[in-house]
Length: 322
Image 1 (cartoon, rainbow, N blue to C red):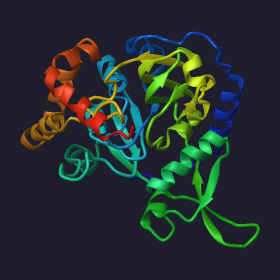
Image 2 (image 1 turned 180 degrees about the horizontal axis):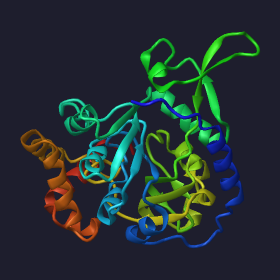
Image 3 (image 1 turned 120 degrees about the vertical axis):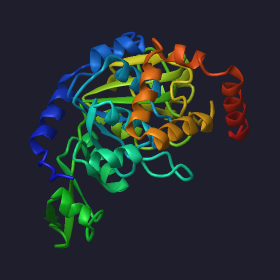
Image 4 (image 1 turned 120 degrees about the horizontal axis):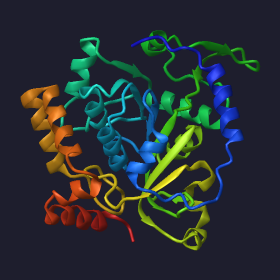
């Protein structure tokens, strides 16, 4: 873990850039390949929407892997095994998060540990709230937000977080610095062609992610008419003016889950974990090699037994309140 450079100037630049970027109300629908080609560059810090294995934009991340971007940093509140795919292949060297791993029952992130302990990757660890406040500050266009989070722990010391004294009470607080990612990738349940998007279930931190990022690509389970969204406008979490590209991609989070549409695929998780347990980081590279051998996410889905996907859909529907 390395000390964080104070991002004040970067925040000002990002705010001016976003204020001056008037994304027109035009049809932004395109393929994942085109969206990544146009809006994801080498060296970018990528904010990944969703949390852990909930609504992870796996189709978009798979396309980034397919196009072989280099020098990336990944930022996410709670990170699943997608980070290890980028670390093991050398496409990313930094992970900014509060957790990496699939979750209970699957063990810790062995590939990340291997790379961090050997000095080949950086794990920039924040508290879950701390990273959320960074994105909130980025969305607000302010250089930091005051908070008690991480005070008294070694995280603040390792990150060299600065403190401020409250002008009203004199209390000392951590000045949690803003984060304005170069690009954000977010998966949603529905969107229109202009980028207005709705999220069912927990929105997590995606509203702030969408506004903090300099560029934003969303994938959606379905594309609907704008009038459909207007029937319940309060549910439109992401406004079209924040979006650069829209990708229609059913099962766009697979093998992760998308609330109301399908559960996470424990068989796919087991496949990944068994590879890593058997061969370490080479297992992760083998997983990526098989993934990118498919020309796109639809081709990847076609390789999964249909009954396996149907089971995930049926279970998700059964668990969704109606």
